[in-house]
Image (cartoon, rainbow, N blue to C red):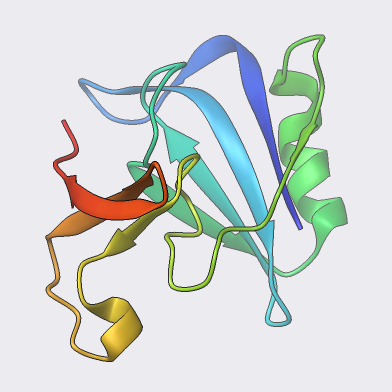
Amino acid sequence: MRKYAYLKNPEKHDAETYIHKIMIYETEEGIYLFEYSSPDAVLCISDLFYESLDDLYDEWNDLIDERGWIDLDDPLPFCQHDAFLPIRVKGREKGTPEWGRFEILLNESWVDYKPE
């Protein structure tokens, strides 16, 4: 299960970065919360781990805007869990990941992707 939400007001992450939106990704081990540095960011800048949705909701529900939590499909196989688009580490599907190199699915073909 994945859901995302926009914050009412950006939350300070560090001296230079603010969080504008967040995403939940639920696994058998627990729940990840991904943080994004702009409203249109595709990949997260950091993540947090929660053991329960209730704990996560207690901390974040008052901070999200009137749109609330928005459902999002789970990622395609081998794709990044935090990505809003079908993005994966190059070679991951073959068992030979090239960490730091990404590809994106465009028009049914995987092409190089360079995050900004």
